[in-house]
Image (cartoon, rainbow, N blue to C red; front, side, top):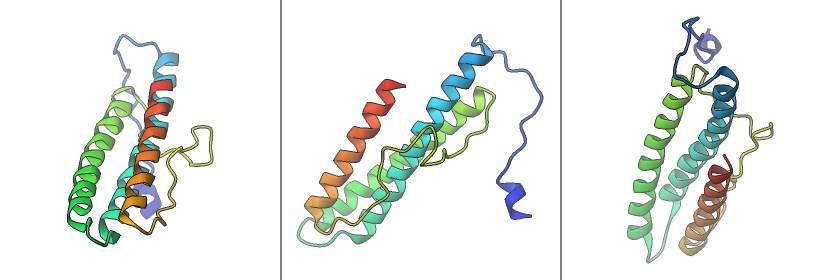
Length: 132
């Protein structure tokens, strides 16, 4: 029963946005890939938020909280845009055609390494967004 809730049915309502169906599909696929990376950044930022230690604790704890909050809102906006294009808003398969560029490896130990890791992932996500 729970799985059915995770597979929403799309309505048969026609979408009339001025963007043809083929273009809407291509845009929705690109946005789905971006959504995956954005959501991965939410999770990774939250993990580092919980686990940062040391003299930079307060600054990085606050920074990562702001990041995951803003990223979550961005993910919501991206998902809603996909829906407005007439498509489901899935998280793409990380190994699929829209492979994630954000690593889910959140094993950095020091605060400095956590920040460097997040910078690398943000930059990779930005490059992917520019391609889209």
